[in-house]
Image (cartoon, rainbow, N blue to C red):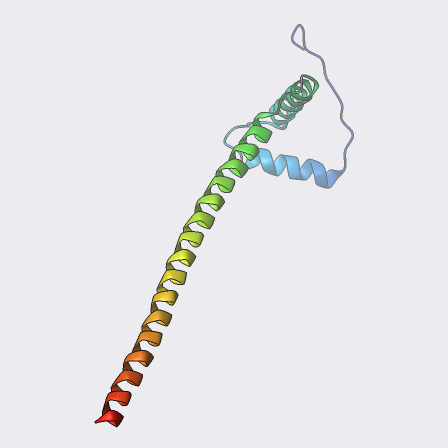
Length: 116
């Protein structure tokens, strides 16, 4: 064994081991189960350190960014919907006003016909 290295034995369920092996097999990033385990443990250690410092992890920051982006999109969509509703309301009032005007004109015409 090389200087400065040690072996570490891990007891786990066979199905979990098989899942990890499959992950390595289909991964472009990892060439061995040991590499996957070392990387994963280091990532978790970084997350723990970030949490202890009160900072968000990279993943948490990405999730928050996505949520903020979707929130912004939602606000924009709601604004557009409100604008369309306002336009519809104005158009609806215009149609109502036109119907009232049409009725008034019809009544005036009928009145004129009766008076003749």
